[in-house]
Length: 336
Image (cartoon, rainbow, N blue to C red):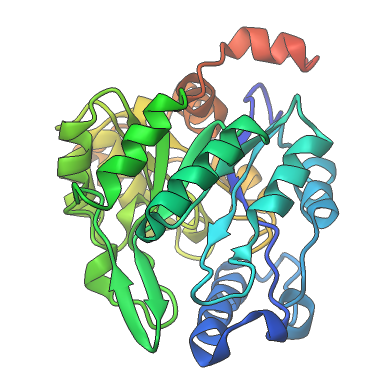
């Protein structure tokens, strides 16, 4: 805990950046873009890894040490990447994420991930990830890349997406995340837009959908969707990290979210190991939205209650967990 805030980190990846894992230049481009995020947004006052140090095979033990031993994080989502079109193991293999979750089953939650373009094979893998490895949610990526060309798919596609959502419900899963915005490598930016979330949210009102990276740079479009659908949420993963290098920009992003959808629909994610969780957590706890932005745009102020919801309570609720029960179960101290 940081202060009296329970911290539930919504995303960390055991990346395998070793050069032999990438399928040629598209995969290398993707990995280099992630390193650029690390190098650009990590504050100068914090340790920055060289490309050689960063672009390695991050093990579940590495991630566990960074998140639990070196930061005020109470719980974590171990989240795979299914980019098997760019990397031999998908870049963050689901098997390693399952292993990361098994190391601390009371604290780490495993989210499954499949490629819906694989049809029946994807549905079978969903069954396995839930049945054998206890996946509590799924994360999807709308842009695939193969044969030198992008293969995007949409969250409102009745042929590709809806069977996957129906399978999730059949397996008792009602929480689905999707990478939006933040185009990486050779992915076409239009396929990362959020337009398709309307159809997903409207057709599956019993599933809660989390729009990762708050759809940046499509923040305004995302806000207009969040306010219209009660089952849409936004993750600050790879967005909270602008906080130190570009605090006013972060204030505008967060202010818009608070104005449009309120503090109950925003969840935290560290994106470890791209960013070390601790500096962002500390900075967020100390953060407030500049008064002139509150007066000029009507942004609500970021209260301590809102910080607690964003850092952990909202994600606990999305997983069907009670905040106080979970704190008691993990032996977390109450506020002094």
